[in-house]
Image (cartoon, rainbow, N blue to C red; front, side, top):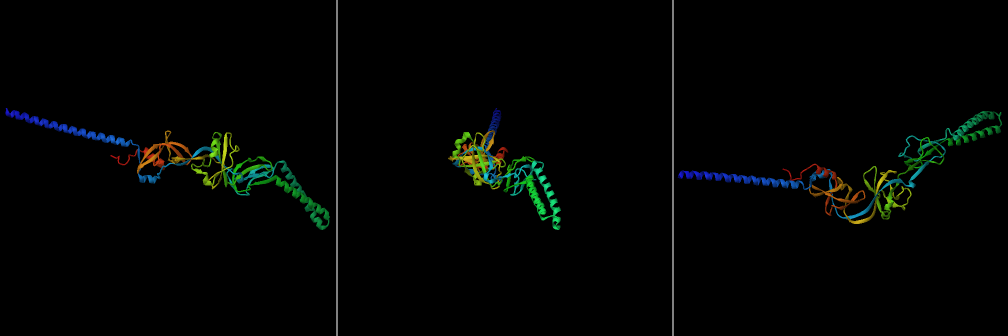
Length: 384
């Protein structure tokens, strides 16, 4: 009986021990699973924080630069269209000295640089009434010369009187002068008066022109004028204009007129602009970068405002209609920040909301930070 009781007690102890062991293992597994869940949740939170990883050394190699923003002065800006045109004092006209048909010299076209005295075209009267007059004059000259050649030896021998010889000589001189004048009328050159670039060719090859009629215009291209066409609905803005910058069709760079010694000139008038626009002019010195006749975008600067946050235009990125900048959070880490923009002078742009003083904004190399964002790089410390 005692042996039976002891046997049952031993079995009970073994079962209790096994049960406790299973419960302990279950709790450990549950504990481990809880840690894994917490780790996964923590990783997801960090992965979706919007942090963009770009190592400092790599960023420096790619030319990524930042600027700490602070409020400052910013001018009101009006963006309009415009054109670079030559100043009247810097332009010369090539004219026809005689009437006739225009024949341009080889290599002459709009945009050609020419030196002073270079032949631009020949005006020929051949085949026209003036041309026939020239032919008749040459015929008369040849006849007068033959007569003079005939009487000259006879006069030397005394067969022909001196008076007859003098008369033949006078007829030859008159015929020579007439032929020379007729020849000048039959063919004349139209030459460049100054060195410069041909900005416009008025006549066409083979066209008839009259004496004094313009054939081409040449600009020395030393002094130019920037014409900004202000829509009449913005006429009130003109009184506040103090400066300007512009972007040409052949360059993406925006340049202030001050780079060319530019200054606002004259009083706005309706001449030189299309209906509905008021032209404003800036005189500039050409350093060789500007081409007369080029159309451009002009940013007219008006009254100066204070306490405005602005960033370089290149700092702004756009995606699906949303504009944003990249902020440097700490070394090697960046964040995309949506912003609302205002006026732009072509070089800097006003930030109405989204930035505060002290923010460190990427101003150069924005494209590389954006590539780092889209490449899915995991920020340092998030590797497993």
